[in-house]
Image (cartoon, rainbow, N blue to C red; front, side, top):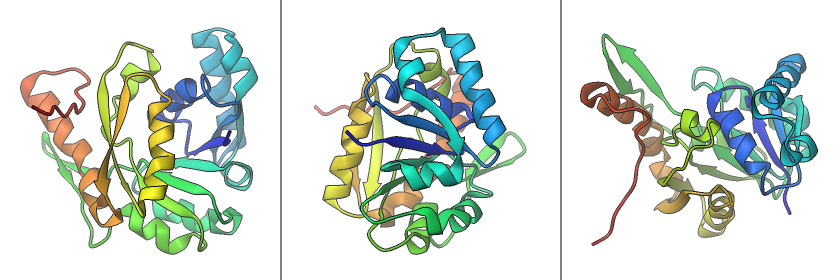
Length: 222
């Protein structure tokens, strides 16, 4: 069973994913540039969620560098403003056959509206160009409502995944499927990651304009 690590894992999405992944995986590590922040986040989770076996036995804290050095699947739950800078600083710690999942959402706010801040290349593709050859890269989780996951409320949502290959997608799909209520859907290769990174802005606008709480995506087939 692969070990899971979250770099920049002390934010809302990182902590929510960590709680659920620790139910299925033996090692789930919350990482931060500041190790004390990672430890404090873990302590807060245990205080708020109680001393459950899966949290006590499977959930750990570490520096971002140690997460990358020690874990098999790394999820980057980083703010888009410093995501590339963080990956560059950690590049030497990556190794072949790891999977890097970018959960980075790229958006800006002008007035009361959010806009996708798309560049020429997605954050995921930029990460691919930075990490060593043999590290597989995908993009996912941009539309998952972190608050609902953290509260461990019942959820039924689709997680759109772009990945550099179908083999990479299958690995990420296993990760997504390990969280009850989440269904992975394959979008295509990393050229489409830029579209996923902008979806958070659209969902936030939908929530504001239609007075919806924690909206997400669910794709139906008829």
